[in-house]
Length: 405
Image (cartoon, rainbow, N blue to C red; front, side, top):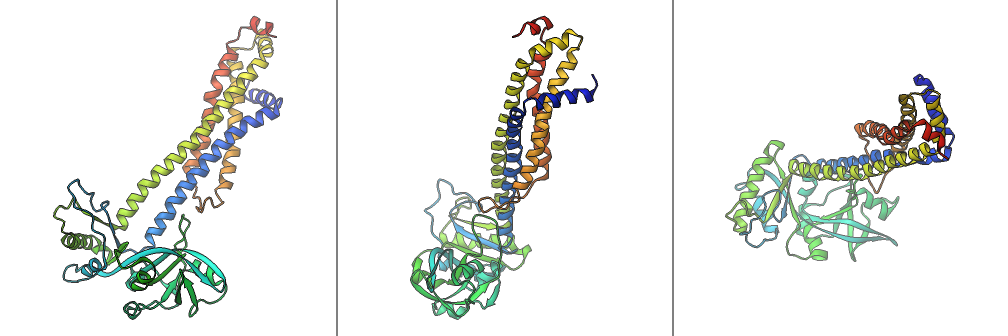
């Protein structure tokens, strides 16, 4: 029997039980599509976070409380001292930190914005200094930034993100309008240019206001959340990071560099941490999807065993008239491989289509290797899981097969 006849017999065997064959292929289809889509979601999440970090600004450094990237605290560390506005002022001293261009202390909260009956919960209300806009690469598209005088006067003015502008003001130009934020009236002086993002948090859903105004209205005049520092250039980020560490160690009374109660994060450290986290996340998603592909392979074994049992007399007749063992083996292997081949092909199509939709706020980014790999593994699974039933069929003795009822 030549390969063409083997394929013809295999197609005939599958066509004789259309529903059963379709359900078996559905298992492989779901497995392959799950591998492609879930790996694309993991890759899309990684890309979204990477884009968000890069949009922070090329020279930006973030100082926050607690040990971490800047050095884990040892058991002998003193109690953590929260960051304060005075820490930020010390970092802005050019004598102590000559590589620092500007410093912006930040405090963040979440409040409900209200304008003429329209209400919207703003995920980020940031209280800061005007230096925040340059350090975080936030540019105004309409109106203007608030000024240092606004900070000194604790004026109730705000610059809002494009999402906040749309959700609160609709088609109305928000510049010059008053909105109520957490019960406090704020005058909108500017609207930020859209940054865009596909992650879990929308970077354009933000209200930026003078630090003392936000502290007075919402957070109180205690510690601050973090300090955003802009280095003088991309090459100056490392010396600026060292200067920040030295200044804050002095202010917090820390002698041991391994017992820091703060961390200084550059883009490089954030990207490295993000890459490690997303690699683990993507591998986990791929493992979950691979299990469904394995279940599809077990389904092929089950169906092929049933097929061999049902066609035992046919196998006996063919062996009795001289069909060699290799022909029987090849026929059933061809059937199992066709099941995985067709199911895998349809799974690739479903995965590519599914990856065009936004999933839980994440735009999937297809990994080409996952498409080729999932299809190849599906075909290999067909061969592997079809091997046992095919070998069982080929090993049947003709006389026993003919006696089978």
